[in-house]
Length: 119
Image (cartoon, rainbow, N blue to C red; front, side):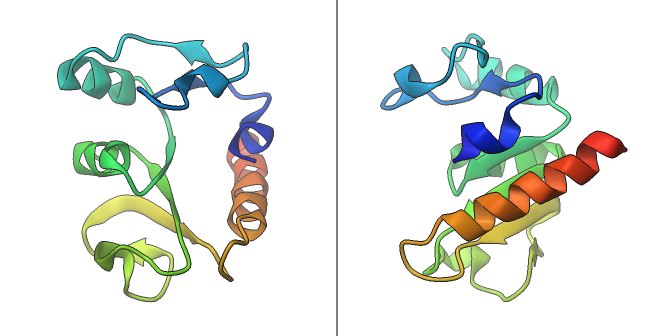
């Protein structure tokens, strides 16, 4: 669903390890051997879209605009209501509205990306 939402944008993959082979051909690979490599890759981005992983925390800590996809039962850092977090000013949260339903947050991301493209 994420790849469908970001199609047409210049994208890099920040996925390392399990699942990295599932990216479409149009998503560029970058070196991610060290956290320094990962920080350099994140710094090159206008926007990072991630689930609640170390990537989201690193991007948020670096001040890069970050959209984080949050499950219905969130990690405690995302347990406050709303789409913002007191932990990172640059982060917007996209929440699952019901258990096992990932369609809603990805539809919201797709809509926001269209607005983002127009700016």
